[in-house]
Image 1 (spheres, rainbow, N blue to C red):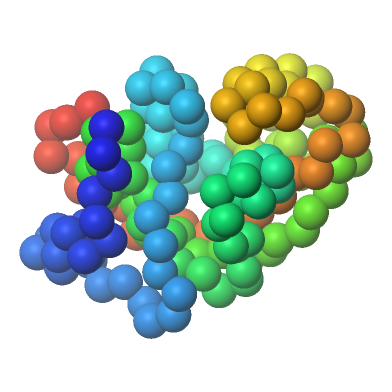
Image 2: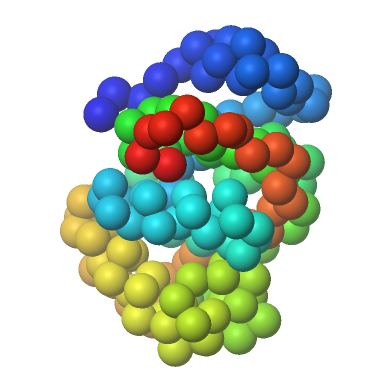
Length: 160
């Protein structure tokens, strides 16, 4: 899927009467497969998922800036359709093995445990490391980002 442009997504949101607050606005996706995207989007839309973690090495590889507190993200699903608007409330970088149970619970995935977080994220980061030519390691740096849900985009009958 080719990601939609930010302008196109903002136009869709405006047509639905969803205002995006001022500030640094970007597009955000969750999951590296359609199935995982659907699962994570449902958790965000339902209010259970309030954090996401990315691999610092991937940000560096892609020359992507790190998220900052106050950033507004339009979450798009695996088809590029907007599903939610969030605002970053906390950002920190830690090694994979330093992520704690409180943060894992904030991510809201699986049973909310640190064991589930580590197993699921090890798999995802392993695939991400392979993509960028790195080897996963317990001390690999991850970007931990908590957010608040500002708006849920009404489901137009699509896959979200």
